[in-house]
Length: 330
Image (cartoon, rainbow, N blue to C red; front, side, top):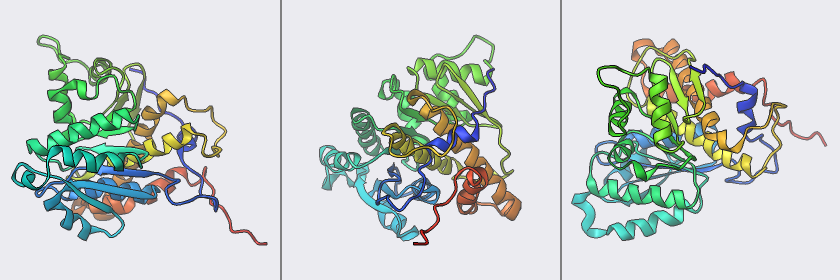
């Protein structure tokens, strides 16, 4: 296994330096597509972690029965109740939903889908269309949780799109591997090898196989993140990872455009490798935030505690590289 860890100085190239020349949206506009009546916390964690890390604007696109609840969690999120379950489909057709979502995609630098979607077939179809529309716009995409079920059922939804990151946990990865025929008779493949093959079969998408160590691969290269994390496995931490990945992918789009001069003197990141570096940076921060939360709260740790540490984790890892802009004395 190629146990490669990118230098923090290299990852820091993706981070926009804060200056007085920036305008709202220059540090990223992102959206989390997810959230149904039963699962309202997941998209909140995705979008909120993006904001805590430094994205300027975060949207949530959710089922209408989830919208009021998610709005009550935070006034910082822009909540769009566009999705409709089978029970609610009467007041808005799939075509109407698509016409609502597509103009939003035009504003974004990256999009995540899957957190808190549930299993409703109507919602899944809207998300499938949104993924297709995001691909047409060359938007970076993070797929997690219930969106991975869409890929397992129809791999072509994301196959060949190298600006995508998939973040399966072990059971989700096992289902995806089986659907792609990644197995050997009576013999289990090493996880890094299996992840590489899955990425290859999906045409070079980036796979983040979460676990004791996070295996990050595009089928050609492998990064391994073994940053120390907390000992709690409470629900929602994967959503924080999705939000962190979303953040760095959005910054990666701005990096491609040359919107800032990196503060690190490291070798520039190849554009094709931005999803790999974004995913590694996200894994490093999510795991460190989990460690910090567990150090403070122990067994009582929840994902809300981890969210509260995500910006501190960012400072711990990047503070020595990124220096804050000082106000002019003149």
